[in-house]
Length: 351
Image (cartoon, rainbow, N blue to C red):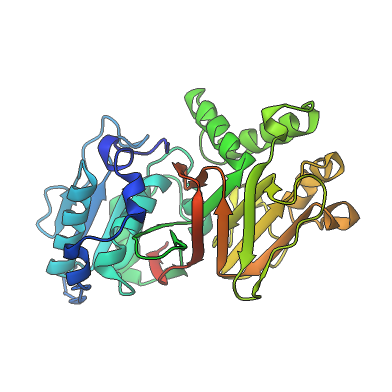
């Protein structure tokens, strides 16, 4: 589970995102209409369990135009966002880490639809990958963010939107989805956090550890295991081809994101991947390809070693048929068939 989560919001109700929507949900379309006040109304969803929020009071809590909420259940988060929409807030602030952003975007999907207030992210988590993509400073305060909001500079991003391929349920929205060995790497990242490594340093340690374990492991090592997985490119109308090494119904790794910038200046999807969904797939842990991963992560080509074992794909939407769990921004979701497309275009306030 995500290190930024707050108890019952993000642990007990996660799987319900993909259930049949309630009659309340079906009967209530988005009510949000921005007001454009002279003094902006700011709604804050604060996760007090996030790494840099522990032991600290909310910022600017005594200001009359700032509404700070700390919902402790998914229902409370939904109600909080619905109230913000009713009041026509001008800015929605997410005071937490990547996991908190994911849950706000997921719970807010049925409320805001395609029309969201401008978003402000206060990077208070342990990894804060979204901070890197948006170009935010690690120590960005609410006062700094509101001053930047008045200058009007924004970066636009669309999250990944993940829905059940059978239809009829809700959705999860976030920015980095991974399956296969990515789930093990996420667990290793949690261990890095427990040992005091955060942000880009934690990412680097996790990637290095995963490469070493996958390269050096013997047959039967969990780090060299593959996961039942088939991926279909709906825009192309065909399945993404399998290189042929190993079971054709299994893959070693799949990672999808809409990020355009990555920690440590990495370019895992090539030097000029552009906007939209970017997908990287490795079918089997071929050691020659694993040895090239450091260069590939910084924009290098896969070369002949990758032609039969890995590929980069852009576009989508993609349909995943997964026999194992997948990770979305640090949290595990169950096996199943899922459609992954682009969610609404969101405007994030930046310096």
